[in-house]
Image (cartoon, rainbow, N blue to C red; front, top):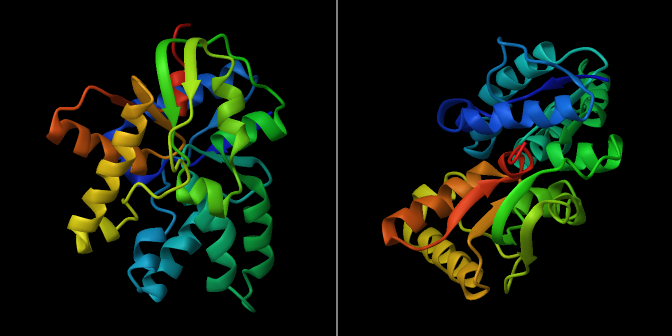
Amino acid sequence: MKVQIFIPCFIDQLYPETAFNMVKVLEKAGCTVNYNTEQTCCGQPAFNAGFREDAREVCLKFLKDFSGTDYIISPSASCTGFVRNYYPTLFQDSAYNKEVKQTGKRIYEFSDFLVNVLKKEDFQSVLWGKAAYHDSCAALRECKIKEEPRRLLSHVRGLEMVEMADVETCCGFGGTFAVKFEAISMAMADQKVHHAMETGADYIISTDMSCLMHLDGHIRHQQLPIKTMHLADVLAGGW
């Protein structure tokens, strides 16, 4: 199966290894992966900041960059949810309406695609330790992803999965929320990390690097004995 991949801005700039690991897993699953080097942003930052016209220009470029019929896979439920749920509001009653709807049907978050489209869950991955899974707001509420990551992680050799308290509560990132309301944001991160630590977990795993970036910043600042990992990095481990 041929697929295109969309790599979010922050993963491209700060966590490129996560993108490479997603490609490794997709190829192991039998996919032929195409990366359009002209791709940029999905438009979400501008949209969330209230700059709808600027966002629309970025979104039009996204539609052009990912034209065609192939599935579009992203290691980010946040970006995936934005394309699926908010592009239609930007292009309602426009000439791009049909294209937007078709694109929304083709774009998938990584774990959702593996489990529900490819029907593959076991990648002979290995990670020794105990992990708590964090449900990102975008994955849970915008993409309706709950069990897919857990099913994939249940097959990882050496990994014990535990559930933390208030697992569906926001980590506090929320894009510019973390900048505008720093004190609240950091208090939410502290709560999330300590709930994970109360389980005895060595790792916090999620589908969204934006959440993990926020939590990791708090962990490093407080010098806490727990690490963060993206699902793609876990599934690509131990080969």
